[in-house]
Length: 421
Image (cartoon, rainbow, N blue to C red):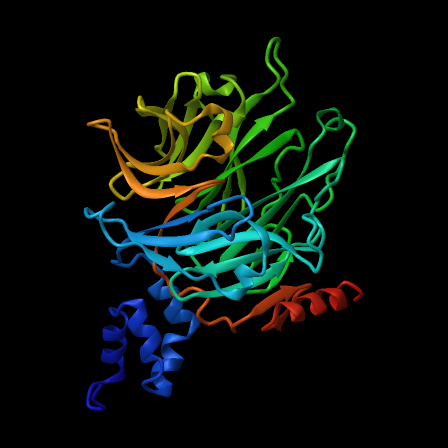
């Protein structure tokens, strides 16, 4: 760009460039590299930006295979547009049997074990935050993780603070044995928050922690600046019911917890296992699945600033295939579903490939996406972002310090060393 153009004008032009161009243009000059890599520019660019929405898909071909990642633009050409295969960065690939925590602002967060033993459950539990667009990832050791503990369990959530663009991992320790809820007076490390900007774990700003009778499920989603979990309150035991279901939200800025009541029909209706939550255009939706009837009822939450209410939007019905799950909602509000062919031999259902499809609520038409897998599917919507661009490559955070490692063996050596400190 001509030196005759004021730098302020150059900045305004650069802000409008796509991410792939920005990554290349860092090589143009030191001034451009400094600008594009600055935290201020990344946060500003990562704010609401006119970009295409994508669908990320992760699936397996078998229970022992390496997960496959692919991405497609979520526009009117789906499912006929081209899918792009994604190559995860090493920090993601080095995780054993990784579990996805969630996604937010174009970042995907996973966790599992780093270790030199092939047995699942041995090694150090770590979370990895991956920017899908620029193929950069950082890792953080999860302290005080209650794995295999008889009394406590750990739930995780991940989101990006909308005001600061700071990625956060939220870790909750909960009582897993109902009979212990009354005898336990204090839950150790009940809530801890990790922020990428600080590189350390700390207590949340707010002191209104969840009641010890609350049991968080694995179903969680980020909606409009809140981390939300499906949960069960075990303190109220009515005749004929074990407990009641509700939603717990965590504000990503104030870090306050709030309880949200579900519709009466969902409070006691069956197990929380058949409920799920999702994000539909930054509105919280509850998915009430009925396997016996092969349907899923979609409820949407409305927040008028005074109270929160739920309205049933539509029902997903798959007459020619078994509805396994509702995974995500497209930009057009159409749900992405996982189905199983009804002609599949029921004796081999766990080994029969399921399929991804799109359900059109008005016409009730189901379109196959052409992706088959065995095991578990994960689908999330995302937009490209520059978040993590200012982080060094191969950064691992542990006990408030950052380490750069470029080989899996270096991580194992680091973990053995820091565990003795």
